[in-house]
Image 1: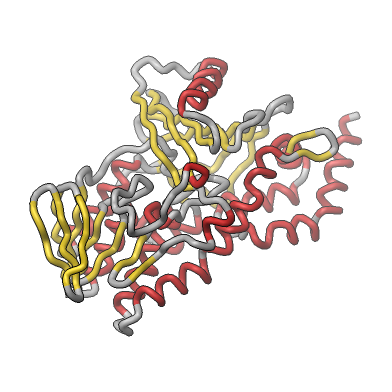
Image 2: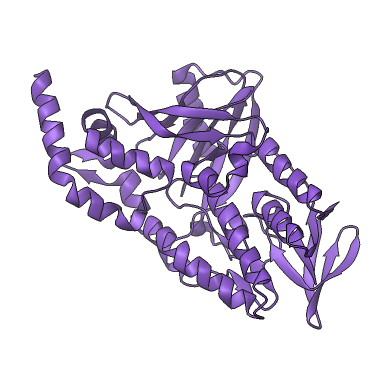
Length: 381
């Protein structure tokens, strides 16, 4: 059997490496191969403990244990991450994954995929360089998937804009800032050799996002002189879209962004790229003849409930209010004054606190958090 991987980003490269390591003849096709994106490139504790090679690799990265949160009209707060975030350049992370794939025996061809057509029980892949025949396909073409009949079908309301700059300089913390009226946030992620400074938001035009980012950078003294600009589109599916999302079909599976697998709140997709690739490979290697059904079942059981819940609460997380303050303002205040809330937030950053269980945990600890807030206020009055 020959498996064609259409797309060489993290999901495609990881799937290719896993298949080739298991002895499957694997072909990876991608026009750009390793390339940069505006996103931070952070990997959570959940990701690098599940896939230890991310820590063991010699690829350059930052290990960050401090985060600053900011929201309008409240003092920013810095708190420590007991389980650090690893931050790679996306180009270098992607390059490392592609190198692992090549070392495992994957045949990598740099070319543009134009289409895929059923050919008996297999596929005929049309590329800019000609046609290729494969038995099975993994679609890993990202959010801007040109294969409209395969993978998630994004509507405008299912997307989030992301843009930013690679700014010369260095720091040893992550900065996250919430803005009034923005369903999204601004980030400053330190990388090796530069900082990734960007903004993601849903429902705002690219021009509006860029203007708000410039205002923030000017206020923070982050110069754009010598900075490189990047922009990208992220899946951010509405709740109803998850019910009809296409993860697989006869003879094909979609992974990562091509399957819409991006957190609708944080915009984080690296863990889901790796995990979906892993689940796709497991389904193919099982050899049951029902890889499509098995893969979709695994995604539906493990990932979709979290994504659905996140898409349902995203608007309230960024734009909700309580007792005259926005949710982000309360979050910053609680982070400063409540050790119990800091533990919960730390678990969210580590990727170990599911959204579907967050309300119950906050409710169970609500009295303790409130008591800590009151005592902190009283001690400073």
